[in-house]
Image (tube, rainbow, N blue to C red; front, side):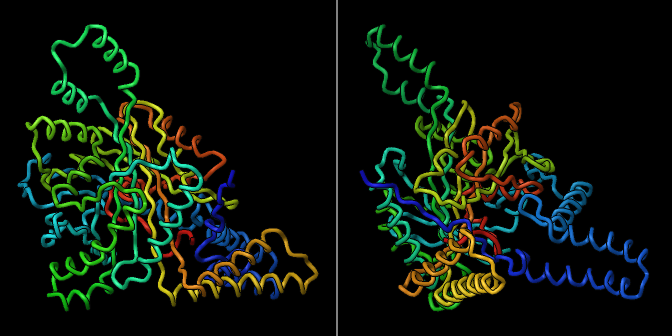
Length: 501
């Protein structure tokens, strides 16, 4: 039997500290705060030095001590902004339709960070029709989303998983060699099934003269397993920056249509690599299909209603952009986000130091009770060749300097130092061989009806990853984290933090 391949080095910080784990600005701040204390001591005013030491020591603690992934000073800043936004009503939201205002069906009415996103339609793309573009005006990015049909990796062998991992690496490497796109986002979310779609299908296919015993057996199966059945939705989003698209888009005619044509060239070349990853079908979403994906993200119950209506031929086929968002979203709490009659808790997934295997994130999608929905999003950004070379050189230089300094002081290298040095050499050799560096961010979320104890469901999600990964609850940012973890828009990779593959 072949051994399972381990993937290590995923937990390396993108910007590690140089001086005792401190970043340069943290070290400079500590030095600046220490100067008044030393100056007072040198002047012989020891009482004043104690007072200054207490005040400056508190400032050092705010800058240095991390609190759940963020320095204490950043926590304090975020808390003040949160309280200010709640007091002034900036974080409360209600749709224009619910407030009785004028509604334009084709105008998006979305809360939070989604207000900066526009959704223009591009020209016809092959046999897919018109593809909806996602323009993030805040980040200056253009993207397109596809819905995939995939059988999953739960029943695959270790060899098959290794092949899929290699193909995913090849896909990311090919994106790194393109000048237009540099990000790829994968979103998998479960769809709670209340049985509506099945009942419509059964009504259309049931035989009137079926034996009574068969009917009784089917009804018993429906009662036992039908309530906890789930489906999975898989989305992939490809995006590129405005700076990379500007020149080729101008050559293609400019405007939205020019940017769409440039993106279409990339989308056409990505279909075969996605099929090599096991995708049976690829559907690039139009405006109405993307609006439906956003709508079902905010309201999981609407998925079964829309699907049943489409199967029965009595429901509305297209979802207007005015109905894509929730009806209302009150001010988000510290630790959860309420939207309509649902509550969501979102996390950032931190990779373990010991490494992981392909498919190990599957417990995050294991639904424990009926009506619960879980989401998992992976955001990848492939760095350019120059940026990747600079990153590995800095990493190798830093690890070498620390090892030499400890050796000069008579300290032996620890296991962590040896692992850092080995990882630095391996990454430098990989980049020299033509590979690239990938920034990544992973997010997970659990959504339940608001009348259920969401903290219990969040605790189950945390227990499912105990010993495998660390889940960092994104307090004070649950509304933005919901967009990252639950909506297929490619939003979520931070600019200066994350991991490196």
